[in-house]
Image 1 (cartoon, rainbow, N blue to C red):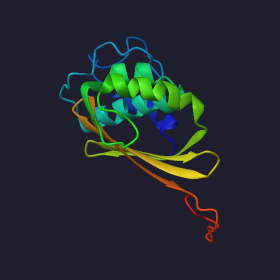
Image 2 (cartoon, rainbow, N blue to C red):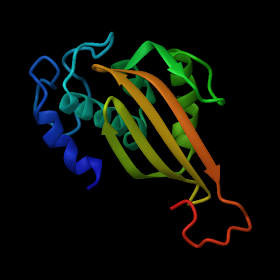
Image 3 (tube, helix red, strand yellow):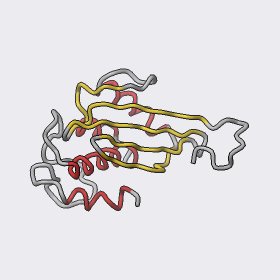
Image 4 (cartoon, helix red, strand yellow):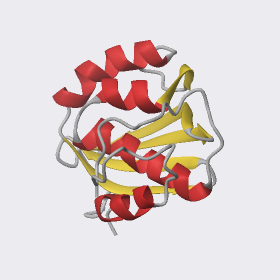
Amino acid sequence: MHFLTLLPLALATLPTSLASPTPHPYPTAPQAPFCPPKPATPSQQHAIFFDFINKLYILEDPTTAYLTYVSPDYINHSPYAPQGRAAAIAFLQYLIPSVNRTIVHETFEGGIGFVHLNVAGGQMAVADVFRLDGSCVMEHWDVDQAKPANATNPLSLF
């Protein structure tokens, strides 16, 4: 099941202090800040993560996604981007709108969220991994693989 169908259900489980002031499946301005980290149940973390990736990948708004859900002390393990939330926003403001991508899979469990992306029309697979501490995204890793020109597997990458 795609995360967009689960998001309204997950958001409904948030307590009033973490929920949007008006019921909406994709809230754009949460009532309370999520960082610094606050205690969050697994279902709340699930809802936070899926709203974060909705803002980042679907709405293509890395500034709102990162200012809402990512720690200022964000640790980025990507070899392509510098450290910190402000540096990530600057990098992603350029990257997100310029890259053709489709979410293939997404999941969240045990404080870790994964997003598997089909990039450039199937020419590259990217997996973004995010670690949450309570209500706040604290850390990121990415893994990418380009489709080789001589790929013999018709199902390669996807």
